[in-house]
Length: 140
Image (cartoon, rainbow, N blue to C red; front, side, top):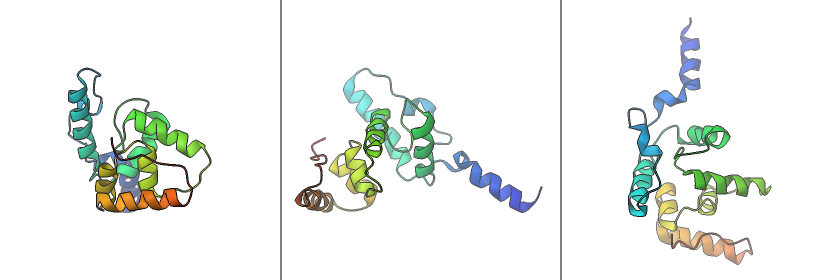
């Protein structure tokens, strides 16, 4: 086996570079119970995903084959909304808009995109000024 073969294997095995490697998998599959506890668990799981170097690849995989749990930084409900948005034939959408349409709050989008909440609010206002379908109001 050549060094090139090893490199290709490493690229294919993206899970080996995942931030969640070594984290208890139960964190990513919250049981519906006490809502504040579930929200805290979802937030903790998303916090693990946020800086992950293979987050986008994980999300692609989750969109194809993972019906439950948190993967790629999105819950199953977030992924369901994202599938709906993509199914509308809207083409390439800015990441911030996809996140809002998937149910992320303005605060979450700001954190994910490395901008202030005020910047997200300006993006949303600009989007609404152009007559594009509304997005989240940030109250979530």
